[in-house]
Length: 262
Image 1 (spheres, one colour):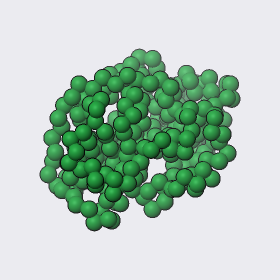
Image 2 (cartoon, one colour):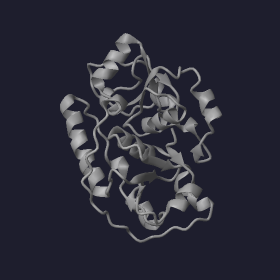
Image 3 (cartoon, one colour):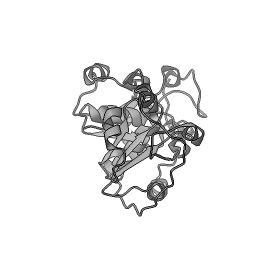
């Protein structure tokens, strides 16, 4: 599955009316310089830590509004980018796949790569052209709290913690409790990249080699951004059954009744 495109490929697409280019960085960075034609939405502002049935229903509603706001349409190819092949752009890719929109990719290497190649940037703000996006949520790529509980009990799925080793072992505390979800294995998302771009497939394969390709894999982090990056990496490697735990540690680590390992 090709979910990351090169700067060369994106450059050849600029000006195409079916392209929607989305800069996912904070507005301050966008205002300084961005790829010509890009609109801006800081996706890091949209954490979601309630994966109850009602919580996911509200997430679906709000994200459809957000995607309509930025102009996603069924026939548009959407490319997200941040500074590198990073978590925000990956979150955009996961979000569109979740809404059954597979015409999506992230810019491999992000704006850093674009600038390193000497390609043009601009500073003018591009307006949103609103749409009425009605993508259908695909529950097969989202994990909620109940699904994680089942995965721990059954031991059939592999829970992948994409955070740092310090967060995983509990020495870095970013919720009311520290540690990790029981049974989770730790592979830091930073290992997905080499000099801003995704590592080549054979190197990624070595990294994730202990995870069988036919296993169900559930990625999580603190808020579902680094986990989205690992989700994208696994999908590009050919893993078919990958989910992201939307609530991640922001939900799990703040619920006193849930088990935690250290």
